[in-house]
Image 1: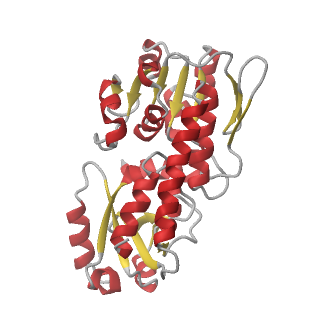
Image 2 (image 1 turned 45 degrees about the vertical axis):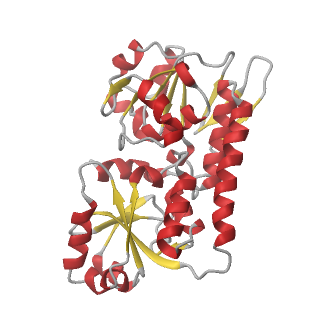
Length: 311
């Protein structure tokens, strides 16, 4: 399921996927090839992925958030944990179109493109025909590599659409300050070559160069050995892993896939076990949700910087 989930991301990345501008009849938002106009700030919002829900809570949406779905780890950051616990869970994965309508939203937000799966009846047009606005995090539709800039632009977009502009500016300032503090501490350090291991035995499912996670790794003083792969996640051969001689391994952690099993598999693999990273047992762990667009971005940079450089 995780492999399918990450592959669904594959068409990502920045290059002006979202913007907002004031209009006489409300903010006009350009988002992933669609235009949404908000005559009034939405009063009932459903968010279909955990990382999108966390952004909305961090913006101070509060009790206007009337439903969420598809939690990744059930452990939201402390600053939004209390609010997250109060949001009704519509489904452990994606709810049906009908279940979403029961929550009577005037805005539906998707974290991944899969949230608006037309084949499952949840296409954006289906909601809009019922007078319900939709927004999608831009990492899931952009045509160039995404990064912190993608996240900041989307927070600004949400602030405009939701009437929370001041909160959006404050949230963005906090994210930038935390990341800049890490970058200052790492000034002049030599980047560490990193292999990010999500899963896979016949091939290695790894982080490519087009996602927000790759930017977090770069800002933390790492160099993704597969940053030349123009995908968010992609399968590569074990021969490629060995040839790129990573100095460290980042294990991706998510529900149902113990990271200790992943480490043991690499240590017993005939090719991976010979890399400097595995030979020296230089392993780090990061939750999958921290490698996606969301408020955990600065935490991911801080975590990776500590693990790779002790900074």
